[in-house]
Length: 396
Image (tube, rainbow, N blue to C red; front, side, top):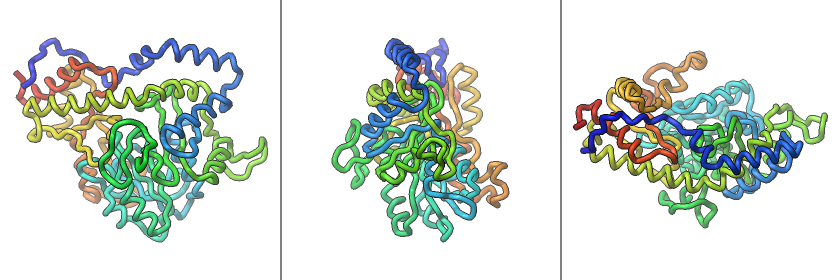
């Protein structure tokens, strides 16, 4: 049993200001340098960030883009996905994974998820493939890797390209030959990082991500020189030379200021990731000590490699009531995601119905993300777990 804390310690869902404050001197100096340079879009700061990012993620190339959504969109454009094509995606993920498919006139084909890790169910994936399948987009949800060995084995047999949605998982890794992975960044022999398994991997640097910009930004990772060239054209309206366009692209360029700030923050990412992992372990320990597991809540299950805990997500009985109770105690929490994509109004025309993907639908009723970030204190974590214990009648 945890000790009661009647002071109701407030616990915000995020602490972006605290993250900035820790590096404010260095970040503000970099901002001033960019402002004085005259290079505000692309340029040397972007090139430096791309080189550092590719090295960290263990890929030959990293292409800086305007957002994680645009990273997915550009990757699909590079594969020439369009009307008549199908792209298989998990139904339990952020909207952009399927939204970019629909924007190109292709059909998102949904499939169910693993009950433990919330990632794509490879058995469901194989059943979802058809002769019209142009690509597969597995998602590394909440910071844990999908089963990429199985996904790639299925895809390679059919010669189907795979795009990793690694928006929530920068720094996650595993040994490609083993589910076990040691701590620390890649590359090492046998180790693969999120975004480096497939022909392309999409990253997001939205401010709430583990590596967050001061605005929107994203990137695509690849080892393919041809795709690297195509993606660099796509981000400037398909242009290889100014005002000469080889293909239809978009304005997907990353700002120099975001690249410059991300280069600084990337140096601290490993420390922040280890802090997230430590706080996740403490949550699990506190929940178990409070007698909440497994009757009332189930902590995250780590199935493969290093989970980087973009979110610490529990499965909770009476989830909506618990969330409201915590919010009344000034404890931030969130539901990612309350409605699977196959049941969204905008996809009604695809013909899916409730019950089609029971694992995802159950997850949507039960998942609850607790606050997790490097600045989170032990006192705050105890306050979170105390609130959960009180809700279920386990409090002192």
